[in-house]
Length: 407
Image 1 (cartoon, one colour):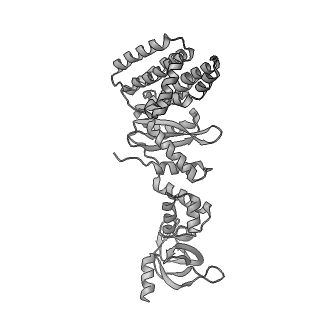
Image 2 (cartoon, helix red, strand yellow; image 1 turned 135 degrees about the horizontal axis):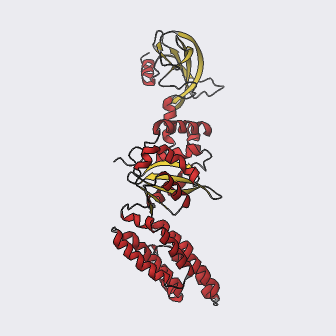
Image 3 (cartoon, rainbow, N blue to C red; image 1 turned 90 degrees about the vertical axis):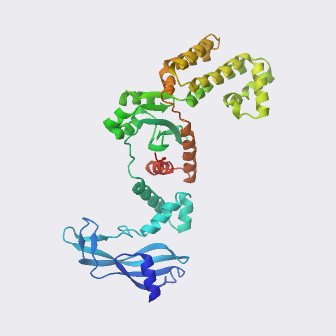
């Protein structure tokens, strides 16, 4: 009897007393533990509809519920579930702290499933608890919705936004992060103006007026929507995306043109195989790669010109005074425009049109490099789930992975 009382106390099944304790019938699973729970008489019970407390019981019904394993064995509860006779709602299922209405798992078992989902793929969690993966996903999604709640956008003054691939076939989503706290504020499918507009609607009029700076790549849709929603906010173009754009539009274009122009087959093969050598940061190259790069630049003058100007362009983001940054830009632009390299001159003219966003880094030294780490973690989350078909659940997992640093 003392052991049964201890089990009852440890079980924490409020409003219920311990009945039969034994093994499951052999035709089900004879290794599992069976615990029968009976409702306590005259126990105050809360209506799940209105929350009113009453001791009146309308009826009871048997329900099989799984609980946390007991001494290494799966535990099944045979609960005589109560419907209260609520004066307001009529017959209504009672509200229990340890069991959700119509649930087949106790809340603590659901919480254990959800916590394990933070570190393991759904499929593995389902195998561990011997549950259907759809059940595990539903538990984890409900847990995230309950624990995360709505995003607090109060006080947000600066944001960084970028896209990431969500599926094959050029299907993208947008992630928006608060740079100071590294907190994911919003994730949404797509990268068009209409698809990112819900974030600004969530900000509200006051939040949109409060926004001071937005770091982004040169995505025309992002820029147009920010200027329409928050005209006072400064657009900030970070170094990573501008230099990457230079690599695609200038270095790649010149390398391809030179490979077509040269007569020597050996030189053509060298140029064709040099793409990543030219685009990678010089500091990340190994000794042998640096030797190859030096030989390549000595071999082709046009490539040497665009490569040197690419490295010099990065220095623009080292300035913190707008006047000095502007002077550096004028010198760099003069060197680029005096070249005879058409892709370089075309890129320079386009960048000049976006100069305000480039020089904005002097006042707001924001960059999207922190999003590179976030995007890598997103890829890991996607792989753990073997792809996500439920966007809402996927985005909840991303928010949970980046709750932010407390200020």
